[in-house]
Image (tube, rainbow, N blue to C red; front, side, top):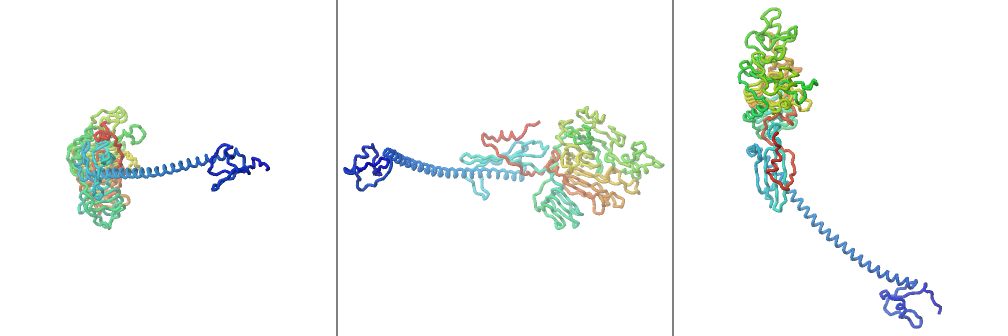
Length: 640
């Protein structure tokens, strides 16, 4: 029989047989055909190729089956791990969600505590201490908005003044809320609060008299509040800011409310007299506390403050922080002279020591120094085109600064006088009171007067003038930097224990040279300008506002002929009882009021507040090692 090549050999073996040596492969053969005997019932695999190669492939097949088993086990392990990981992640996500929910609960409870505390101190100012902090809750239970107890949660609440606590820049404080649960989770939040300054109001009254209402096309900018009825005439008024009343609006159909209005709002109490008298301490520190008198009629005072800036850096402007000064003139027993009142004797301005005219040589000569008749008599002098009137002690009355000019004198500054100032203004430097920190490091921004005081001039700086009696507007009081610029460089607060009164003097009101002549203006402007925030524990009014008869040659307010012209006030008016500044028949002034946003954002120093705390920013506090005592101490800077 022809031998078959080994390359073409047909190999037959059981699929499940053992793989051994070559002899073993052929040991069980048919005796005639020499082919492997086949056992019945087995399934055989037929392969072609070399015998050695078939053996290697046989071995690889066994290896592949082992790898497949390992792979199956590995996949099973991976699938199991994924399943376990998924279960673990699901469990962790659940824990994280529960923790997040718990933290959210604690934060909400802490924030609610801040707002609850703010509401409580607004309702009872005795809960708010003068210094340090008060504890309003200690390990107290916490409740949901629906009144149900939040299990396992306790809260601590603290409130008190923080930041600069002197009150010079306002009244600021903090409320600290600490919330902890029974598992040790703790959240601490701090909320800043600040009391509203009365300077925020464009108009505020406690009492609105029955005979005074808004009307005649009045336009009022900024916030308005009254504790009384807010009345509007049929002639109409426009309110451009928020409006609120503790009662109701009468004649609301005649009003235009750009931001709506609120009726039956909470009362806001006027400041107490004690708030005024305590400013004496602040003024005394800077050498700006003065003693006047209460002499004189309405609109008169024996002391006046002249706001006088000095150009220290020589740039022709008065906007430097060290350029603000005042002079103080005192003439006890001579109140009419201090504020340049019309003489009560003689014929009109005949006996005036404040009014006159400029001679040909440039000197100023008062009416009282002129003869009663002749070519250069007093009558011609006060009708001249260069006629003028000046407040008592003014430089123009004497051709320059005179320390003891007239019946009174300028008060000397008790502190050290800078040689720089002396080099600029000479002997006058000894009578200039610095209202800036460079030349007066102890100045606190307060001028205090025991008695009446008259004011006028140009303010450079940030000042509150407090007087136990009346504050008299004897002449224009304006800022060195126009408030319309929005820089907030200058701000003035007037805080009177009684009234703030625009004087009916020879500068503010048009005068008749004699009792039968026409009205003439004796000031540098025919209108009055007040830049500042007025707060009177009495009224804000115009002296003799109803006495100036309306005639065709009275001072005009813009295009409208009126008794005393326009009253331009930029700032705000706060008064216990509303006072009058004019009448509808043309007497007094026409109001031209505008609001100064700087008074809201940067109120005058130590200006009274409403006692109502506004919400400020919130802060997260690190609970690790937290101690309320040491933390509160860190919120109050050391005194300079």
